[in-house]
Image (cartoon, rainbow, N blue to C red):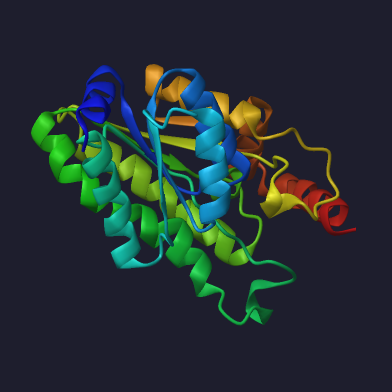
Length: 257
């Protein structure tokens, strides 16, 4: 780590952001860079990461990249080590990387369990890597990017992974009370990204979710739903599941045509 990089880290909060090459991840990188954070951006597409880093920080002082797959243990370790080598620590881990079944039903997919590995196992394992140092410093923030599908069941493996991530986040927050380490869950509804590009629904872009993520770093909260108007869906799910069934039938019909 160079002296200039160390000085940059001393002045800024250091964020390790997964899934940064597109969608919510890229929008979040843009939002956080604009707010002055130091960033270690990760994702599977090294070219897209490099382009994003050059755009956000032409000087290369406060945005670095480390390509890799969050489902691979060695890659996860390289991501964390890259942040340590460049900035000296990880203040914030944002577990954003996520996948879903590309088309059709999960039971027809040749490898549906990869959704669980990416959306649930990888955030847990990355958290295990950064948590000891955060607890020792008595400061840090784990932000998991869930989904409204983790509050209102929608489809198979994706909902399973996001329900699991929600449970992990809420439990971890309680386990860490008094430690100085914050845990937050940001649950987006349908937003326009590569993951939802085939959906036939009116959807906002990912910028609103990116602002919600940045805001929760400045004002920690247990859970945030974005856009906020998705919140009542989870209430309907709990109180009137039959109504929620009909709502989801309409959404699925409009989504898939």
